[in-house]
Length: 310
Image 1 (cartoon, rainbow, N blue to C red):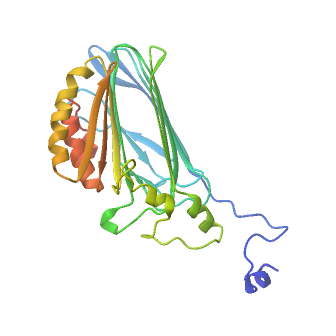
Image 2 (image 1 turned 180 degrees about the vertical axis):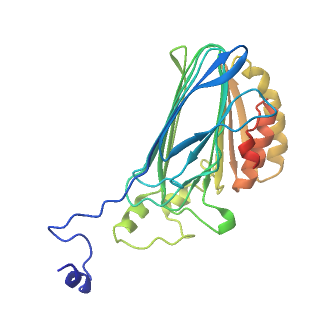
């Protein structure tokens, strides 16, 4: 019966048959860092599913570096990944990733990443994963929740690239949603919500309404070219520092941004208030964005993970 229907141009599951069930990736990592005898140590490391964590030996710092790996090779619709990190009083930890996270075309639904970070008194955490690359019709929802003490120090840096310019890729449809919530001594001090959704055309195409053509974006994709959005840029990043000395880091950040903006490939700005330093960047491509982030991180006194340079 199925063959006869296919011959007549009718596709889809036949009554009485089970629809195809696609495998979904799951992964979780939980890490705890503690201070002992004036040094920071990994007190707990748990991994499951497609999420792995490695701790390469460091030669230029006493701060442990945790490197996250996704053995599934990327993220697509229905995948779920979780990270939990607890940095004890007086301890320090750097979190990064082995490579850029790739978000592939979704057959339905969105992939999800959630991170829960906790910093105790005088703790320091640098959250510095490499870029997230969103491919055409990829769909990703990401959530970051932070609980930190008033005297803890936090650096968050997330970069997103819409397709790979070197491969001639254009993202003509997809979804990217990013939510950050930071609480300091139990008080909400930072909330940021970003949603890029130009998925109406992609959803229609996925159900047989047409074939999306890379390089021919629809109206929602065109909206990203406006001056109030990405102005045609294909890469962007948020760098946030939450620490008691943020006001002292503002001028070095703005001095670095003056040179970065002069290049013409990257546009950025910085502001500081209530113990927070926020820097936003948009760039024409991933390489320009990475170069700008390296300069900015050095300017605000943040060590770049070794994984960034390999």
